[in-house]
Length: 249
Image (tube, rainbow, N blue to C red; front, side, top):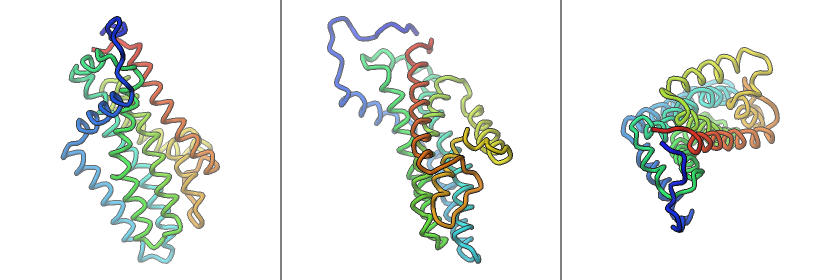
């Protein structure tokens, strides 16, 4: 694909208020499938079931914090990986991205729509069950922080995995290795490594709740809000760069 401007000479570019929502709706529709909804829904149901299970223990708040940490470290990234890498990656694999690329639309809009669509689907399927799980466990004092941590983690992972989907072939497999090795094992085992992970900063937000010490915390909750948004923006910019500069089939 050529990287030349696809807007015809003398033609007025469509309004962002028209094109961006249209791209967003298109990508939401392409990401929704029965298999994805059932698979991610099953993960959310597991989190809620764990919340019900730990409600019978002696320390429901601590146990609910452990469930939230587990969900932030595994359920949220896996769900967002499944959605994010396919948002643009499927279009690349199917050689359909060229048809969107030729539209007279600023190059930043499609990656932005992909990140927004991914987060839109991932948040209700993961963040809501995490918050509900804390409430069912009888740990309402951590439910808000768990919910907010999951929302910001979904947004950050959406940026990372949308970028991966347009940069790498078989991005889902690379993303799975990233989740299990970088976000999971390294973040738990290496001292100080959490500050280089999404789950570490999500854990910092969770850790701000009273009585909920997170196993993985990168720093202060205030920094967590800023860093997770910055990761989302960085992923979006990486996707924009590839979309504008790369040779896409």
